[in-house]
Length: 417
Image 1: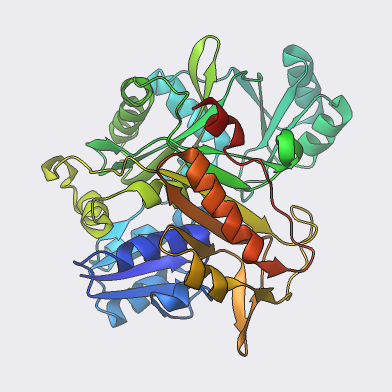
Image 2: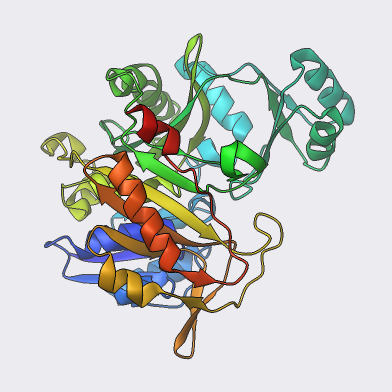
């Protein structure tokens, strides 16, 4: 099978790494990719938002499967263009991807499907914003209705900060605050059958102790020793299957990766948000534990044959990912700084720890930073404690001027396990 992956982040590097280890994959391509992905896949320049260009490239490569990684190309309808060219594609249609592209659309689907979520208001005027903020009180949860690369949500006790964020957006969803720990659960679906993956937890705040601003995610771990063993079955029954059924009923069937961001509240499981693609950095730890070869699962989603697949096989090991971010992230990050230590990690920590590239590029012989989140250092171990130790040992070998990372990823879960 020849596979083309679209995207250039650590999620795509994790996907390419898994696909490169799949014996059924005879050729692996990525567009546009990054410096790390170049080690496992052949890179091609492409505008990932241009469906015609992506479909043309897939045709030229005689790809048997296209995997669209990021949300923006999905919302732009890139998967539709690839399918229209007769090529199987893993990823939802532009219409179905509105589940992530519009918070208001997602709330409407959840209402139709009877999915438990936070009470909310959709606001388009300052007066509506003030009314909604007053109705729910602090802590205030304000979400940009559109795509914001993981940075469109503000959770704050500061009324003025909440109001400023809301009024800077064209349309916002303001909702009640959900207490309790958060869980990410991915499921692969072909629009009818839903196959859940293993749950993970990510860390959204920039600094240790969940301090600082929201980010795209600073680390993740799996499994969750503190979670109810019945959690996945419950979320399948109350959230994932009803949502897929509702979208099909509306005539916008969803195939690809359905990601439920969940709060385990005092009143039960509630959906915080849906995403229409693999989450970053949770993908890094979930795929580290998946033993079933990946390509066949993604192709079954694209071809509508998921029901024919045997159950997925998983490692009992734990996985931890620590994100190394550039100076000033999540503000305007500094880029172009050389990265050192990558060869040392490969030589001394493999196969238990490895580096997945996010915002990197080649500059002559050097690899330099090219984004806010630069690297995802991922490690596996017999338990979370060992996986953490291996991940942070590898992080310590990496040099990137002014870089930052959290030191407490999975620490609490490891201590309690």
